Every structure is written in C-alpha cells, then in structure tokens.
Image (tube, rainbow, N blue to C red; front, side):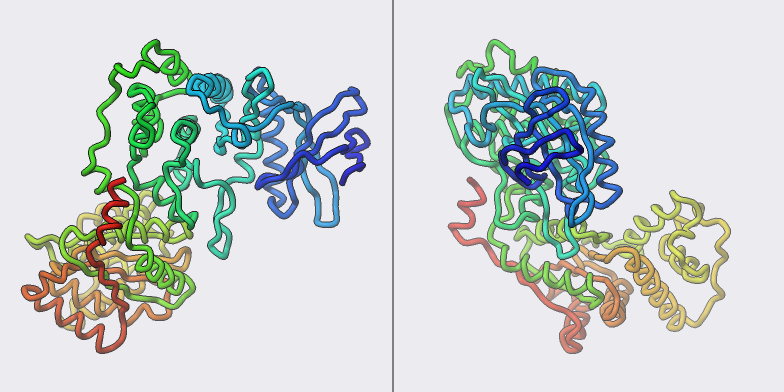
Length: 514
C-alpha cells in the first residue's frame, strides 16, 4: 500500500500501526498540501451496510470540533482485490497512545482524565457515543494534550461474536449494557473511563480472564474490588469516583462526562484524609465477585450448550449443598448462552410450594408476555389449541389472548399428555429463531406435575435446539422422593448430564476474597 494514492489525492507514505479496527498510514494530502493520518478498514471486517454506516458516521464525527478530539477531515472508499474498503482521513497527531506511554504520576493521570471528560462531553452533546474508549484510543501529544480518536469506527466495527463463538473486539472496557445489547447512552463511555482510571492507578485491569466471555460475564456480574485495595496510595475520594463509574447499572453512574470533570476538579480529590463513599463489603464481593474455582465445570456446561444450540438437545442437572454457588453457576451459563445468541427463560421452585407447574408457568409468562406486547402472540406461530393449553398453565395471561377458546376436556391422563406436548411445541417454536435454555431453579422443591413435565421434556428435546437446566440441593433428596424418582429415570435412560459443585479449596477461597 505504501506509495499508493487514494482517489487521486492521498498518497500513503508510511504505515504507522494496525489494530482491531484497521491500519493507520501517514499520508500526504496533495489538494491541501498537508500531512494527514488515514485509517483503512479491511473489507473483511464490514459488510456493505457496515461500510455505508461507517461513512455516514464519519460525516457526523467530522462535525465535532474540539481540541481533545482528533479531527476527521474526509472519508471515502477504495476498490481492492477483496472488495471495496472504506477509509477515514484524520488529523495527524504526533505523540504516543495512553497505552504505549501511561502516565505514572497521579496528577498526570487526572490531567489526562479531565481532558477525556471534556472530549466525551462535547461528543455526547452532539449525540455521539464512542463505545470503544480505551488507552489505545487516547493520543498524548508531547505537550501533554490528550486527543480522543476512533469515534466513527467504534459503532461500525464493534465488539461482536462470530459464528464460531469467537469474540472480535475489545472486551476489557466494555460496559454491561453494551455486552447485553441493551439501550445505551454516554454513560457507557463513563464506565470505560472508570476501567481506564482503575488500570492507570493500580497497574491492573479490574476484570481479566483467558476467555473473553468470562471477562464479559465479570462486567455483568462481578462487583469491583475497590482500587485502594490494590493501591493504598489512591485517595479515598478518587477511589469512590472510580467505583461509581464502574457501576453495573447506568443509573448508578454519574449522569454526564461534565459532572465527572467537575468531580475531578474537587479540591479534596487527592486529600488522603478526605472520605469517599463506603467501600464495597467483603461479603458483597463474595456474592457478586469473580467466578472462581468452577472453570472446568463451566467449560463442560458451555460445551453442552453448544451441542444443544447446534440441534442436539440436552438436559443438565447441577447439584450442590446450599450456598455452594448453583445460582451463580446458572447465571454464568445463562450469560454465556445470551452472548452466543441464545434465549434464556427461568422458572424457580420454592420450599413453601406453589401452584401446579409453577416454574413452567413462570417461563411461559416471560415468553408469552413478550408475544402479547407485540400483539396477539401470532409472532410465536403457535396453533390456537397449543396456546389454549399454555393459557391453562398461566391463566393470568388470558386477557392478552381473549380470542383463544379453551380446548375440549379429555380424560386426566390424556389431558396431561396434550399439555406436555403443547409445552414441547412451544419450546420447539421458540428454538427455531434462537437456541433456547430453560432453567428450573431449586428443582428439588418442584411439584409432581412439574417433575413429570421436566422428565417429558428431557425425552422430547433430543433433536431440538433446547437445553433444559435444573439445579437442586443434594441434601434435600431424602425428603424429595418424587424428584429422586425423576433423577433415577433420567439416569437410567441416559437423558441427562450431571455437574456436582464442591466446596472451594483454600486457595480458591483466597482468590475469591482478593
């Protein structure tokens, strides 16, 4: 590419670097007789719609005019052997990225952070969210000026999952709402700023793992260990700000970059005697902290989910004593399923009992309420007689489906069989659009009807994109004879895999607390 001239105007003189979002060249603009930087994005990274969106966003970014934002001058496309590739012409900035040359001094770190806040505030005021804020995207000029770059690329070449389940993009600074595909605003950038400040002040990222999905799960579930626990030199007020920026819920973060800037201007920010907010309790870190000591079990469960998602339906039984981590294990696997394109529906059982088929009624409510919100449930493509049976199981949903008549009565055994087959049809229909995970939590407390339905599903989902997951306490089995019988049947017919969660070792417990 060196020596190539793009669109009879930009001569590529030198390769400056490359990364996940493209390759950057020093170039000369012959029209305006100035040196510029050009970022080229491989055509393999974007489809036609993505390329068009990238160019549109480059136009929006070009309207930003701020001393802490790398200016965008032009955008275009060039044809190559692998198809049309977009490029963006930007201001050429001398200096190094924050990743290449992190400031070690706390005052210099805060000086950079304040400039990043000013850049974000300007962008957010124009309706632009960066979405990929990280040290590699902050350039530091020799005079200390910080410039934020790659706004335009962040939305088009976003962190994503490939068809093989591989993560493309940066996950270490990813806000939970972005990971889950939820609505977002500028507070997603503030979360990333919190991660950056944590890394710069402690020398470590707050969430790390060899598996990108495990990092994403920590963003969603794990409460952060306050940076002062890693570096006691961090003043309490700054420690409090960093923790607040990294709140899971955007509502718990500062409302704007401008407010963060004002916080960084506080006179007592570096005062070691000033008090910040109360630190996260150790107990809370245990409840929602890093996922420790279950890597092998989780790996096996993820493999089972992959089999189910490919059309080889599976049943997984997760057991352990009370408080051992069954719910957290289920949550980790559910997050993995959602991040790989699946749909998760959860129903819980309770010691005090409940209505017949209570966990499955909860599952139906969550699915059918979604359909009802869109109209009359036709989006589920369920026959009327199937809907009629499902409404018997969750009668409170009948107002949403007033035109569905009840099915004619049958003998009790035949009626139960029809109901079970209607649930199978429901699962089959839902799994056509996305792999489905059904979770029955605390199944040892399930009623006899739910247990019979669970056994029926285990037999009938073998060729469907469905994973049936049930958690239970082994210590309750002596008093849960119906559930024992189901376990024996599933084991005898080889219909289920089992994962038993044991107590953590001393080393694992220590890792959980630190």
